[in-house]
Length: 498
Image 1 (cartoon, rainbow, N blue to C red):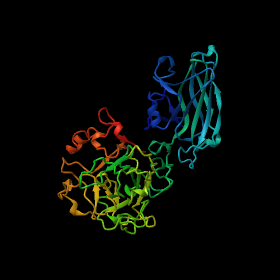
Image 2 (tube, helix red, strand yellow):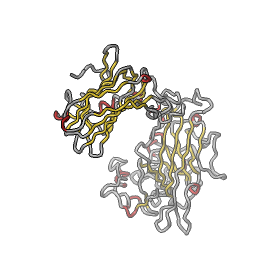
Image 3 (cartoon, one colour):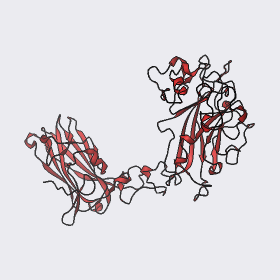
Image 4 (cartoon, helix red, strand yellow):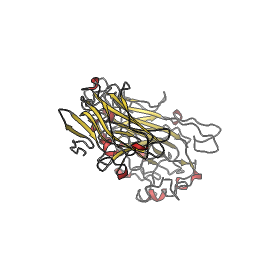
């Protein structure tokens, strides 16, 4: 009979017998997944409830054979070993020609941050089960002695099963290992009390995106499925040609938090892809709600020596209410013009496509020298959402001419006299900025995935068939206008520098 005194962890049985603690696995949970959860590991091993192959109870583990020999593995959780023997029931079915089980002891190695397993394992021996038709379907008990140096040690038992014979099966059941269950499923199955926290920040290595940096713990991407695309029209407040390729760039923003959930670093990855304008445009990002004093340092911006911008000592643009990064002040800093009379870069198929290169801008929110405090109030993840992401185009080296996404407020440097002129319908209300008089059409677009963009001088409505309906309804109709779905796109009008 199988022992059914289960401990608090699934799939494990601990019981006392002559002052000996034993951990067993009898397969009765009926699901390998449940055993994985309790830190067992398997390779080419399955569970069956077919009565022809069940040794005891309702389930048995099985591994299949081949003429050249097939291998199956079972690896125990971490244990603190006691003296005694490892036992298991082995049953060869379908006239197994030969079946051998090998046993190994794997010590714990605290320097192995990934698995904790030492490469200096100990061979415990082998057991030849049976071969020949006369031993068909006969259950045998294999055993391996715990060596003296294993007693009291923390380690795993690794069982390797080699089975020879075409279309044959060997069943494994009632595994018993003397010792105490010592794995912690909540800690990547590391041994109890051995939660690897290399940097000492309170987050175990298996859950820490930065296991060797005590100031950083978790990545938090603003667009978790991949990069988004920003597209701008630079003739605001006039409508222009509405091709939305005067600046096209992909972006990914990673808000890195520490163990306490405070944002300590913001990584802005930008991929400038195209610039269809004849203007020397720049690009910036305001993080609405974040004060300039909460940023310790900015690195990675590409700025000319004769720039129109003035900067604070931390690298942010001077004179704004909120933290404002100028990523580049001239598109020529980040894209190469093909020459030959081309008006733009990567927007006219008559000219060669230029290579594009990713750039990274990093905002440091904590002074790495002063480690016990932020320079001001800490920034939490909830303070840096898509609502606070306010990217904008700076048109032709004129700092007052800013083009933002629809409904976003300008920075303090904008020329307010431009609002309400030509086709702009801004009236001072928060939601009115950068929306056109023609059904509220915008001058800037943010798509939360990477998409193709328009050829030069071709209206975006000729490439994206659902765009106008989306914009004219304030985003209510066809919110997926940019998707690659039937009837949505005219591919011949689109380009896609990557």
